[in-house]
Image (cartoon, rainbow, N blue to C red; front, side, top):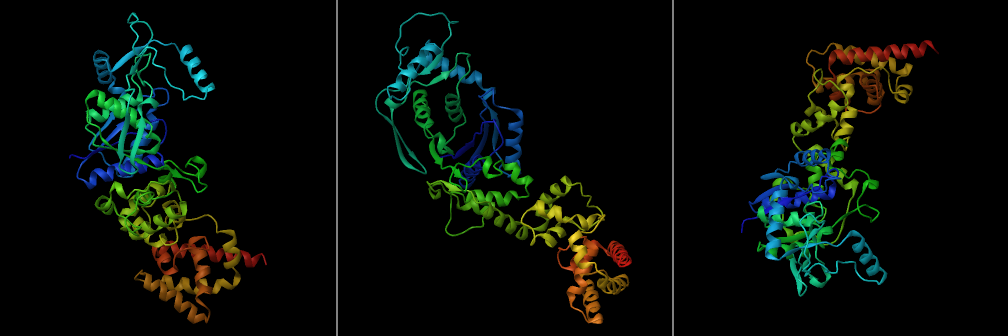
Length: 471
């Protein structure tokens, strides 16, 4: 059996976390089986679909590196195909025209609800022999079977059954001539030879309707797998109130796509006790029967832990590619300083996100205009003048600028003055970085460079002299 899956978002907003996980599961299932993956944009909601949302979906898929073999297909460009199928169904008798007015349908719905009944079309036009003109307003409805049940074996949930008596005759073409979502999906899955439909559990109720239409068309019925929803830590469906839910917001917040994918794959799927999965691991191990039926809870701390892991365990060059975007957003010019892969190594242990690294690395590339007030007040004291003068002199004479020589200069200064390393290192840290926190001073001074380090120490000594003058 040829495996072919699809991801079919509606472009009414960003690519959210739940959609990204569905896309990942569909992508992994096809890749695991050596099959194909289709991207389809379901833009039949003309009022709410936007180009901005389409761009956001594409950007999210590309950032996550979830490539597709076919598409993107757009449903709005396939209306002729859908309508041709509907016209054929009218001829075959598997669909019929319904002339019921909105007023009648609203009244029917109100009456049914008042009687405690499930609102559904009563089939008035189903077998009507009334004559009408082509231009008389009408919709087209699918002639749903009235007996028996729809039973399908969900790859995640097992057997699911719906009575056909619970399903009314679905509108498949509106009064304005536009085909409806549930019908377009059926024709698309048929034409695109989709073998497995992997989607959110909110689509379970659509499945029996779609299966009945597929059978009426004589089309093969794909296998279905409905993934549970993602909850926030308060037990409610994940939404904006829980923080970032759009995939590209995670990029903006400094997460690596590898970390987000690793987090999402584990949000409902497992392989033993393994926590860290490369894309190759995921493609090797992923199966639908290992997906959990119950809802998953999003945990930002776990995602941060994974992100920190990837920052420190991926090749620095790969992390640097993503870091470059954040550095650029902050307007930091990096040509006059260390390579970004070295910044990853310097700051990776201290930072959980690329955004933190970018915000912390400016002093490696740009001179600062003032010292952090608290750090300067604590460490740029008159007592720090001599350690800074001595270490400056030693740094100025170094011909081979290496971290080891930086360390030796700081250590020998402390030994010479009979003080602890902190009495030298902390004033030096504030002097060359402007802050009270940085990586080890040997690697920090090395990365900042000789000329720039000496210049900044001179500024710190001038600052101390000014404090001394002020008493």
